[in-house]
Image (cartoon, rainbow, N blue to C red):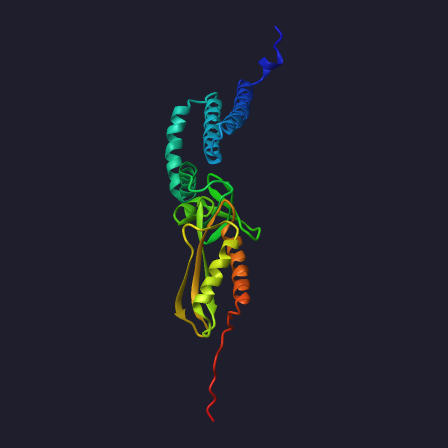
Length: 265
C-alpha cells in the first residue's frame, strides 16, 4: 500500500508546521486587534496614552497566548510555566532596573501627568513630549535634540507641565540708574505691558523695587499671560523689547555695570 508524502514525514514535522501557523496567526491577530482598538478609541476621542497602554496590553496578551498554545503541541505547558515563573522571578531580580522603567511607564500612561505634544521640564530637560513608551519617554528640545529619558527617572523627579497651565506668570528683572524717577519708570512699564500678546489685566501685574544694585536700582516686573494665546518664552521676549522701548521713550537709563577703582600713589 502506497504512503503519501505527509505520512512519510516524521510526526514532529507537521506539529512544527502547526505551531508555526499558530504563532504567525497570533502575531497577525495581535497587530490587527491593536490597530482596531486604536481606531475605535480615536473615534471616541480617547487620550493617546490610554490607547497606547490598552494597545500594548492586548498585543502582548494575544501574542503570549499564541506562544503558549503553539508550545502545547509539543509538551505539557503547565510544568513549563511553573519553571518559567521561577526563571522570570530570577531574571526580574537581575533586571530590576528595566522592570522599574516598565512599571513606571504603566503608571505614567494611567496617571497621565502629561500628554504627547505637551511642553514639559523633566529631570533638567525641557521640550515637547514626542512619545511615551513602555520603558522610556521621548522629549524634543527647543534646539531640536531628541532626549530619551527612562520612565523610572521621569516618575521619580518633579514634572513641570507648561502646556496644562492656563495662566503663567512672567518674571522680568530690570535695573534702572540711581538718578531715575522710580515712579516714572514704573508707570512707563505698566503702560507698555498690555502690548505683550496674551497679557492679562487680572491677576494684576506688579512692579516691585527690591534692592540697590552695584550700578542700578533693581526691580522685578511680574505679569500674567494666557497660555492659549502666547507661550512663556515668547512673552518674555516681547516684554524685554517693550520695556526697553518704554524706558527709552521716557529717558530712563538701564545702566551698564560700573566699577570704581581707586589707585593709591
